[in-house]
Structures are given as C-alpha cells and as structure tokens.
Image (cartoon, rainbow, N blue to C red; front, side):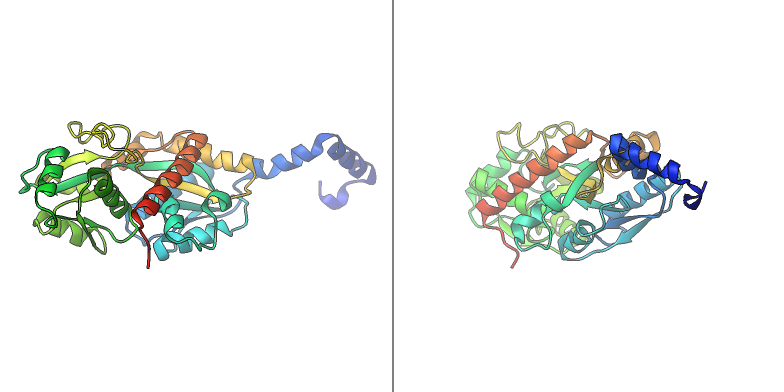
Length: 328
C-alpha cells in the first residue's frame, strides 16, 4: 500500500502508535534497512600500502556480505588528517567509514590545531589488525640483546643513531622514548619511507630502528631483533622479549588499523558494521591474509577497541610532550 492510499483512520492509528512507543520502532527502521546504498570507505593514505590493502580486503568482504557496493576512497596527505577530516565531517548515517591507523591518535599531540577532535568527532568501530614494532640493529652490530646495545651506545657517546619513517611517526616517538628511558643519545635520522631506511640499516649506515613487523619481516635475515612493543611477544619472534619484560614502560601500544565512523551514527547501525566486520575478521582466509602481512587479526569487542584508542592517545601525548617532538 502506498502512502497516499493510507486512510485517515490508519494514519491516526499509526501516529497514536508512535506516541505509545512507535518512536523506538522508527529509530530501528534505518538500522534494519542498513545498508541500502553505496558505502564509501575512506583510506587516508595512498593506494598500494598496508592500509589500502586491508581497506580493499574489508570492502570486498562487506560488499559480499551485504550485497551493496563498498568503494575505497584514497584521500592521502597531511599525515592522514585530510581523510580523517572527511569522515569526521560526514553525515553520521553509516555510509562513510574510515580505515585509520595509530597515527590518528598521535597527530593531535603533534598538530594541536586540527579541524576535528579524534575522540569527539569519530567513534572507533572495529579493530582490523595490529602489528608490533621491532627494535632492530644490523647483524654486524656486536650486540645480541637490548642491554648489550645500551651498553655499547653508552660506551661511545655521539657515535650511534636511529632511523625513522619521519618526524612524529611511531618509529620516531618510540626511539625518543628509548633514548629517555635508557639514558641514550641516539641521534634521530628521519627518512621518507621504509625503503631507504631499510637500505641504510642493512648496510650499517644506521645503527638501529624501530620498524613495524609487517615491514621488517622480509629483512630479518640481515638484522638482529632486540625487543618488541606490546604486552605479548610476537609469535613470529618468540625468542625476542617485549620492552615491558626488560623493565621499560609505555612501549605497550602496538600499531593498529581500525574502522571508525563519524560520531553520532545511530548505535544499531554502528553495531551492525562492527558485528559484520568482526565476523569477517574471524574468517580463515581473512586471518591467513592478515597474518601473511605480518600482522595479527583484529575482531575484538568494540568497547575494547575504544579503550585502546583512548589509552594509546594518552600514552603517545605524554611521550610527545616529554620528548618535545614537534612538526615544524
């Protein structure tokens, strides 16, 4: 029956139902129908990288599950803030999704005048994958443990350095933290990307670097791993201790990739996206692909991911402040 065919009596009955609790039924309507149109997944980094690969994998799986088109929209630039801002300002209807990385909670402490507030304008929805950072040194370095490396550096002030993906990146922040906690004077050498950093590290032009497992994994034959971030050892490096085991603190956060929605998306819609994403992340082929990238699959409860986002934001803000790291 069309709306025009509804009789006045039916209309009155319907409005009366709303007054007696029909409002809840109306609120549930959009969630029941979701998704009923194209979904845009914003990836705030260029095509071809790990974030893009994960985004396209999730887009394909969601499209298959829901029978709706899910497109990946790459919006790189400004440390991810361009794409983040697009989603933060999007209509909160569940049809614009962000796949962000850990940098989303680091940048606010580095760039205080952002056009959005990460913790207020975006809502964490699903953890897709995570990866430890690994402290590595060239095989030629006469140190096989972190304590041996610390002793080596302290014995020759000003001689040793560490590389990073650039100022304000996780590798820079973690290297600064190591300097502060171990009392070292490792000189920071920023690079533009992983390839030149790894080339110099393998050639012993660099003394050390903290590199995510997904990136460093193919090069571990020419490097020595001394410690990993996180609360548990990486199963790919079972003999390498965590920084926490070695009595260092604030190295508990790991790198992560997660889906976010604009704040204000109705909870039933957000929950529908979260539940479906977590179902996908427990599929054997998805687990295999993520682990093949050197990462750990997500699929945890949304409230746990929310706590991770807030806790990591606080940890990184303190490190950045204490180390006086700035983006000039």
